[in-house]
Amino acid sequence: MNFIENGIFTIASDDDFLKYCKEIYFFQNSQNQIYQKWTTLYKGVDKPVKNFVDFPFLPISMFKNHQVVSAAPFDAIFTSSSTTGKGVSSHFVHKLQVYERSFSEGFNAFYQDYRNYKIFALLPNYLERAGSSLVYMANHMIQNSNLGGGFYLYDFEQLLNDIQASLKNNEPVLLLGVTFALLDFAEFAKNQSFQNCIIMETGGMKGRGAEPTRTELHQTLCNAFNVNEIHSEYGMTELLSQAYSKGNGRFFCPPWMKILVQDAADPGNWLPNGKTGRICIIDLANIYSCSFIATDDLGKVYDDGSFEILGRLDFSDMRGCSQLAL
Image 1: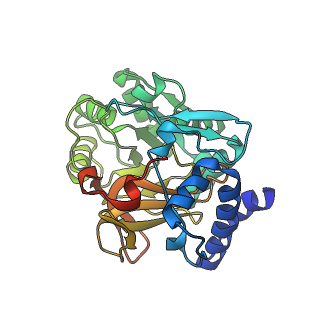
Image 2 (image 1 turned 30 degrees about the vertical axis):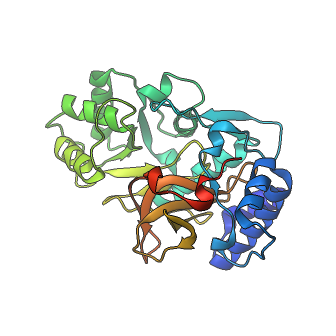
Image 3 (image 1 turned 120 degrees about the horizontal axis):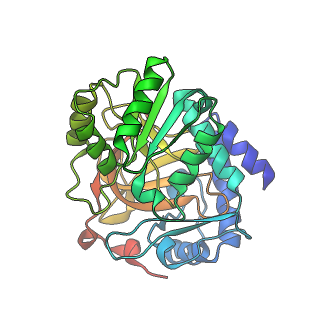
């Protein structure tokens, strides 16, 4: 599979993308028992795969109850946090080097070389547990940055001092933070200027209170930090790739990742651009787990290829294949 590992990061067209989709689909359908069972349930009979919507998309909940694997052994096992009591997702990662290449080249595609940033990570709840893929990514980027950086728990005064010192030295600064921690830091650092600092939220209140809308969140953070835009990262335990937004909540994918929108009430119906439905993701970096995932997010895709997350699914409206259990 080495040719696929290298090939997915050179994708230059939809034809290239579809070619690798087919290669990975046939590999996973033969090697991944959970995906193979789901494919049988979903398709019923063997149908030809001609386009992106022809691939069976595995419900993301399967990562909570099964080992969704296409190859072993594993370099790492990433786990999600759980505040709903509905279980923890586990992503068994066969090759960490694929993940490292995905998040490195994915970030660089939108922000140039991450090694030229000073990276400050404000991820307290992720640091306080084991198995976070986000912490792994941030740590790798910090350790390999030419300017360094660090993790901060609740020492906002030290974080503020360090960011201000870096900005004074004209160092490019990236502040990566979970939603509730950025809100707390914004309150602490109110009226301080963070111009020329990229502030990037990763989402999630993690049980710390009602989650604001992205528009409300970004307006609050813009006002507090005195910046024009708040950037966002869209990722999850079950993915080895991330999408990025430089403002307005519109995310763009790297070339080896694609978003499709499925009718939440009818999984067999795929929606055109501009219509809201269930976000389904093709992540070709998930070579050794499952690349075709139906998330629990609602959103829409735009004509320029960007997408927006608008909320979570109401499972009372789900029917058909989306309710099947293995």
